[in-house]
Image 1: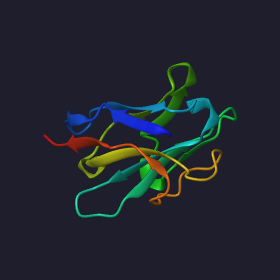
Image 2 (image 1 turned 180 degrees about the vertical axis):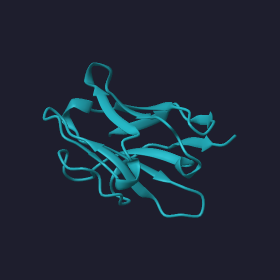
Image 3 (image 1 turned 135 degrees about the vertical axis):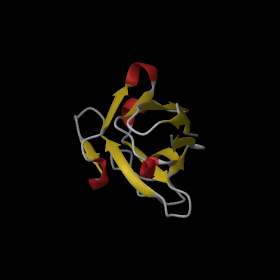
Image 4 (image 1 turned 30 degrees about the vertical axis):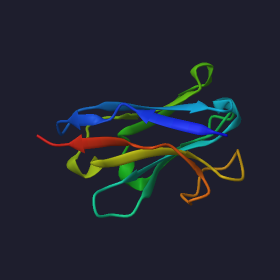
Length: 125
């Protein structure tokens, strides 16, 4: 059974940076596309970024504005989300996910995807 564990969240000031990590167990991260989602208080969950496996594919949401970088280290079974120049609207719980059916597709955000427990990010002065 695939398991994902996020870490790296916390409190950061506007303009600051954070790097989130997503560790995959129960399988090899190199076999999967990994997708980052976030859910802001009172809002629906939204996709943030997706990274492919073995093909250099990356995708970012429009709100990224070039501030996010997704990367992976499959030797560590880990995917990262580097966030820079952070804004208050980046506040939320960040989740990583794997598509519930197709290993080489970005997760669709559905309940049958594999999800981590999330890591809280707060951007505030």
